[in-house]
Image 1 (tube, rainbow, N blue to C red):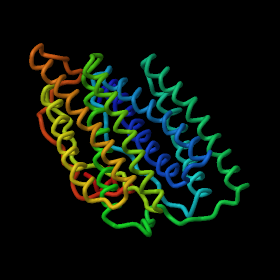
Image 2: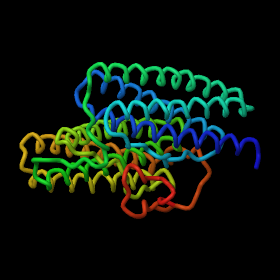
Image 3: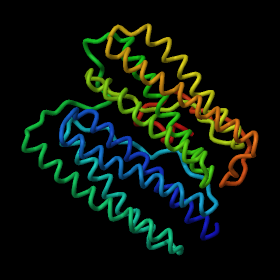
Length: 320
């Protein structure tokens, strides 16, 4: 294996770990509700999102393919103090790995990027230690493992609709980000990134609704269309938006909660907007050839997510 390929493989491992950290930290923030600690954890997750993006860009610049899988997400623990301990442990592992990868990096730009990320991870470790102290002083109660939570006192159909929305939004976030990464520095890539950010908002809204009902939002994905030409990728994104619009339109008439209906209607209207944006981009690509992909061409296909997966098992050994 060449030095460059070894470097790409290390960056892909870093990318998987950042991905897992994002999901783990967001799950803990959702479970803590509208608290100052939750806001601080969400800010840490946003840092990890930036790392994820930077690593993907570095991989593409080296001629590699970004990795949209993720490492294991640890949702065990009996409550907030245990969660903070697990988040601090995740940061300790990240620090050790980045130190190792910096020592092995023979590319100045890559080493500089990893040193920048390492600085954040050290700060995050200290932040989680501080959050643990704050929660201990507040004498927060243990609530049991997150994955054991089930929404109570609400119609099961409403919760099923929310979980379906979470799954859709997570899937398209990954798909749009990947398409952005491989489009290179062009207007289409930037537009895809903007729509992915909007889908992240949707994911947060829906996941918080599940958590507010004492449930556990299952952040798992469906099939992703990751390969093909620029036009094929955009068509796959349009297809995803149209399927989501149809689903949300049907669900609006099924939910019993008026505020939830309003939320689904708002998200549905955003999906219609995304469809229109992607359709305009596709027309431009077909007329003027659009962007050149940043990675080597691979056979066009839709990657199947396989069996139904949960946050804990998603992209783990049983996802192969």
